[in-house]
Amino acid sequence: MSRIMSLDIGAKRTGIAVTDPLQIIATGLTTIDANQLIGYLKEYLRNESVSLFVVGWPTNWDDSATHGTPIVANAITQLQKNFPAIPVQKMDERFTSKMAKDAMLEMGLKKKQRRDKKLVDEIAATILLQEYLRSTQGA
Image (cartoon, rainbow, N blue to C red):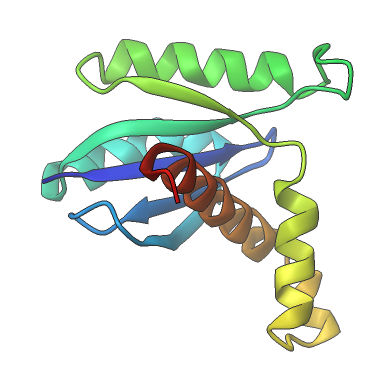
C-alpha cells in the first residue's frame, strides 16, 4: 500500500504528516518553507508512494474564505499540475492549530518549544491526517 500525506499549508510554512504504508497511523514528517513544497514533494515521491494528499482547507465560521484560502487554493492547483495521478482531498482545518497547541501543552513541552511555529504546523498536519483517517475508517 501507499501512504496518505496531509499538508497544513500557510503563506510562510507547510506542515507535513504521513501515514504508515498500511494507512493506520499518522505521523508528523516535517515543516518546510512554503515556496519549497513542490520540490520537497518531488524528492519525497522518488522514494515513497503516496496515494492521496489531504489538504487543510481554511474557512471562517460561516464557511466564507479566509486570507489563507487563496494561498491554499493556489497550492492545490500546483499539486494537481505537478502530481496529476495523486488526488487531493480538502479537509476543514478550523481547529487544527488550536488542537496542536493544546496537544503540545498536554505533552509537557516547554513554553519555548510551544512557540515553535514549525512544530505547531507539523502537529497540525498530523491532527488533520488523524481526523481524515478517523472519518474514513468509521472509528
